[in-house]
Length: 164
Length: 213
Image 1 (tube, rainbow over the protein chains, first blue to last red):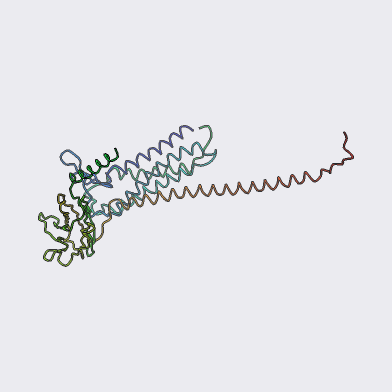
Image 2 (image 1 turned 90 degrees about the vertical axis):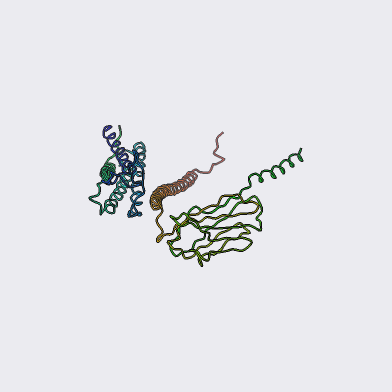
């Protein structure tokens, strides 16, 4: 039982770390000309042995970019609240009950990161497919979607037993 | 003692403004406007002196990318002189109140070529030492979405809804629990009353003749 509990806890922490990396590290897309990682907050160029941030080109759809930013931040927030709720429910839940509220928070995190990644895939870099490639943050965002979905399903199915 | 304090404070009040006598001019920092709209560029100043009758306001305009500034407005001797040759002829209006230290101008029918820096310089004789203040005008075809407004709005609304749902949930639980509690108390109270009445019933009234000593 304790092993299962530790595994679930570690899974949730891993989800949080992946979500935070995907949101904060600006590397959803790498422009091959100049090896320039970009999105969702700034674009970086390496000049004179140091990194400088530059503005996005004016062709970027600003409203969609801000929607992606908001969604990914919300996913992080929901996941972080979820871990605290899980720990609280561990102590306060009656025997035999399910961790519904933690599952709901993880599910909302999954939904938000799915919205963010979907908008990004659909609206950005549609005409630049040979000018760059997707960066590690984009991949992490989709992995976070899968992991948070798995985590929320586990919370919905798991029942609390005594003698943890 | 009191007169000494009063005299020193009056002397200080007299000395300090003399040394910090500089006029401070306030305009905005940046103004955004749509093509074809009007915009009011405000300019006011702070000065230790009373507003004199010879107060002057002057506005100069430097287009974006140019190094020269041209004068477009001057107020002196109680009269306002507007640009009648430059880029703002017939588009400028003085809407300020020099008596209230306000030297604002109104620009009408903005064009894309009006992008630039507007500098206001005010003088309040004898308070003339000061730094002119500039406001940058940005004219857009379509008002751009400012960075982070949509992001902040989405996050704020979702978190607000979350807090609202939690509060409503706990409120409902509290109200339902209170109703159940008050119902059970009233039921309990009624039962108690009926019980005491039943006990009094079968007890026969005491017969004084039957009391044994």
